[in-house]
Image 1 (cartoon, rainbow, N blue to C red):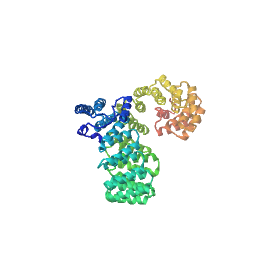
Image 2 (image 1 turned 135 degrees about the vertical axis):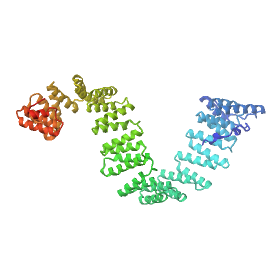
Image 3 (image 1 turned 180 degrees about the vertical axis):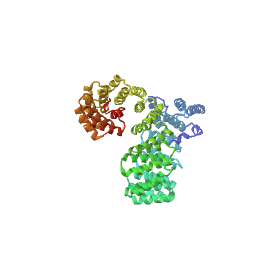
Image 4 (image 1 turned 90 degrees about the vertical axis):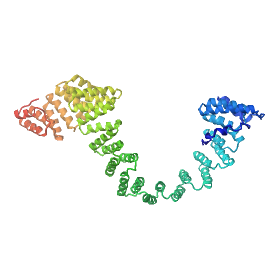
Length: 586
């Protein structure tokens, strides 16, 4: 619809004569006056040759500014020429076109109409009128402009396509179909006509006619695989899977390795309940480098949404591996594999694939976050420290990486570094209450390990002020107070709160028992330690149980428990001395 802009300069300059509309102005008020003048201007005497020369000079100057895209200046010059020769078709056309470039389609219409009135054989004038009307959503009038063009301008059948597009934009499908018939009579059964007609039938939900057009396409283009695939999709959409499979097999005879055909065959096989064949076909598709990485990722994401599902785990993992094999330099291949493997519990493999992803593209925050999270879940604190430091080089203002770095340093017993990282991250997490609480939890543990008990208590209290039932703090705070023999009633209250809520948690039972032990209540301490050891006989709990038995005068039984604790490992530094001397050391 923009072909009229290509009118050559010479055609605009031809014989600036004829009758036309009145003077156009740039303001809304003056534009209105110009539109009215286009109708009301009375016949004027023919301009003299001198006047024609002046008008043509003004017109040419206007064209120069138009070419420089200074449309306001161009319009002023065209308007001056117009006052001399208002009945020139080319001048009216150019004023209308300039208004269109100035986004004033309404002002362009009367000038386009005036140009047509003076020269009914120029296609560009009709195109200008149609565009101005279309931009005002005057679709019926625009369609009429095209029909007038086709009627009045010889050899203008190419504009039937413009008319059909206009009908389509209005969802006037029947008119569009009639226009396609006119096109077919003029140009024959063009491929695009069949495609366009098929699309209309689909919009009308007339699938039978759409399928019929598809068969015509196949007959006219027997080697075009894309038409076979489109037809198979239509058959599938209309619940004709057998015909869809037959059509795809025809496509595969043309292109045996077409991955999209294999994907469709996989989907159809799954619909028919043939899961082995479905898996076979999708693996063929994924093994093809011609199936782009984005399509593979999209399919894998669909699998991820359905997980965990034992029936899908094996095939999804195989497809992830195939994606990496066929796209070994694509970061997203490793990233999506990592996502899938994380969900099915293959955490170490997932973490390693994430590392391969950031090796190729280290700009993705979420992948780094997954890496350090998996390091933590795998209990690999040395990796946690190393990877969080790498992430911090890229994202130094992301509090979460300071948290994981501080946590890793704490586990590695680098307490000073832990505190430094955690305090830095806490500063960056202002406003995120949940994250601040997580930092305070770790800071409480870190400061306690540095024997900076006031700072440790302050951090723990900050957590409890926000979450009075925080399990981590209730347990660690009460236990550390008991080790320090400080504020034991507070320690007992916190530990008691935990076992009331979690009566079968061996760690919490051990903590409560140890607080009772420190308070001298050995009988009660023994009761809770027996419960803890019965559930989870860890070395520390067994050793504590021996200590309580010793306090209760049961020395032989105490030594027996100490010996069990030593065999389990991770007992206290005094365990050998206790066993050797059969005496309690704390």
